[in-house]
Image (cartoon, rainbow, N blue to C red; front, side, top):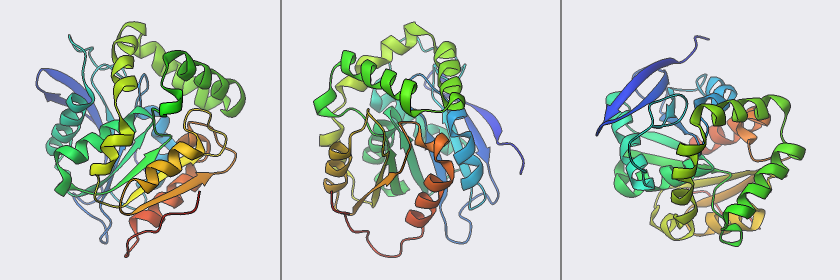
Length: 262
């Protein structure tokens, strides 16, 4: 399979990038496009395995937001709403219509906010390792949980991808965006989502607890919660095949999903 093709995206004085595996220019056999949205400090790279697997089923796009993945650093702090507007502009420029948003970590916030801005566009949402759990809403706790995840629950390759992207991002931009992530009330805003939602977590993830994830799934009219066994926070890399299958199953639902018991 060909590597995704990168395209620079310019919007509102900001520059990012979208990586496209575009088979059809639209839905394939009724399956909408998949759009992968990274978290704070990282880039499209840690979606590499998942992107390749999903691209076998339909058009797949991975986004690098401004300031991440080697893209130019913005002159100002960007809110979650700013990043959501950039995402929508990136999809417009790539001619992506109806799609499934797949966010990881802070990318979950961008996905929910994009839905709130343009609900008719997004058919379903997949929220992986969502942040920030209200019981862990402190920078010290988040840092501790991430350290535990890296030391005990991630693979060498996932750690290498994340660390490499953190170095590209740099501490200044990371620390500028960190308060944005910490202050976004996902537990409140997710109630505005009216389409089916799949909440995924690695069973060993110390960042996104099981109780937090099941609570989010219950906050929407059609929510499902699933765990990927023996994975940490970066489940899309360490459990890529199982994550891809869960997303494909979710994309093919013909009826509203049921909430799974917590």
